[in-house]
Image 1 (tube, helix red, strand yellow):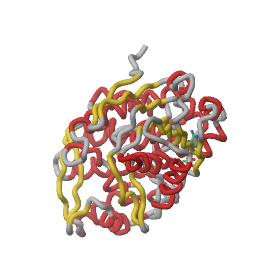
Image 2 (cartoon, helix red, strand yellow; image 1 turned 45 degrees about the horizontal axis):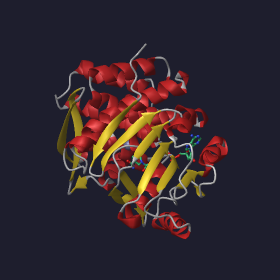
Image 3 (cartoon, helix red, strand yellow; image 1 turned 120 degrees about the vertical axis):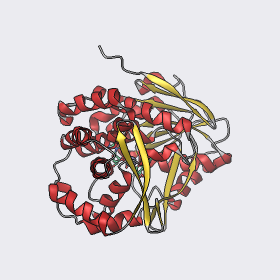
Image 4 (cartoon, protein in one colour; image 1 turned 90 degrees about the horizontal axis):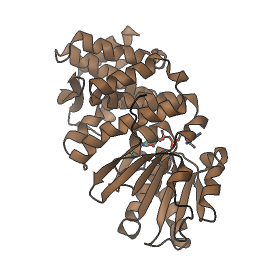
Length: 356
Ligand SMILES: NC(=O)c1ccc[n+]([C@@H]2O[C@H](COP(=O)([O-])OP(=O)(O)OC[C@H]3O[C@@H](n4cnc5c(N)ncnc54)[C@H](O)[C@@H]3O)[C@@H](O)[C@H]2O)c1
Ligand SMILES: [Zn+2]
């Protein structure tokens, strides 16, 4: 049997926190503390009634996981509820949901009492395989996405495969797409396991196989966030696939799910690296083949190169007329290069779209 990781510890400026892969019922204290509070995704609470049972009489706020929750008003609603229910420094805020609930609740935890203790139980594949570690919180303001945020790591993370059983297939596909950039940055062994999982057909992966992939992805992420928690240097390599990906998301007005856009973004970054002579054709094709197990180009058909270019220009990583792209010279070997946002990039995008 494969030696799958059941957990690890992440070092952060607020101390170490554990990431444990286990049933939530085994991970939580048998009796929740009187000072604890729970913020839970309403959808998860409905589909997984055992969550309410686990938290017993713990005061609970159920929230709808939408972009409105990730706003100052949404954050204020959680904040006011915590104050109204006398949440104090002795208590832990449990957060059960995907990246949307995480972003809003962890933002609140970061400002309440100058940093409240929170524990996260991620319920989407994207949250299990990406957002649950790293400590970033982000909310939207005035139409700008993710522009307001803090670094406030959790005190613990519980990865429970049972939640994935009720996820929509598109959420699973998006989560697998998001994990592609970690597989590429993880190196040959990690990528080989990712490839093998995809070769079986992503729809066929069971919840345990999905959480195993998620654990691998966040183990890769851990190396970057421990080396550069505040995202000023090597953590920026985690943007692999994201500059092109955000361009695709923007051009499609959000119709292409984030992780799917990232998978195309990784494919674009590897094609671009190949064209610049940084990456061999064999390595580009190896990554391209994995991408093909996940997508068929249908999402890109309505889009043009100039629409994606406009989307990239709106991306927050742009500086002046240039954009910083994360490219690769090999698996695990990322380089960041500044590229002008000009007709050459537009042409490259048009040629890429033609290939589908
Ligand atoms: N903080 C970070 O580091 C970070 C990183 C990546 C993404 N994000 C943010 O995460 C958000 C996206 O999060 P997400 O992809 O996890 O999705 P999500 O939290 O928006 O959830 C997607 C949908 O799935 C539902 N859902 C959640 N768990 C479910 C389950 N187990 N079964 C059935 N339905 C379930 C939700 O109610 C929602 O309708 C974005 O806002 C993004 O900006 C944050
Ligand atoms: Zn992402």
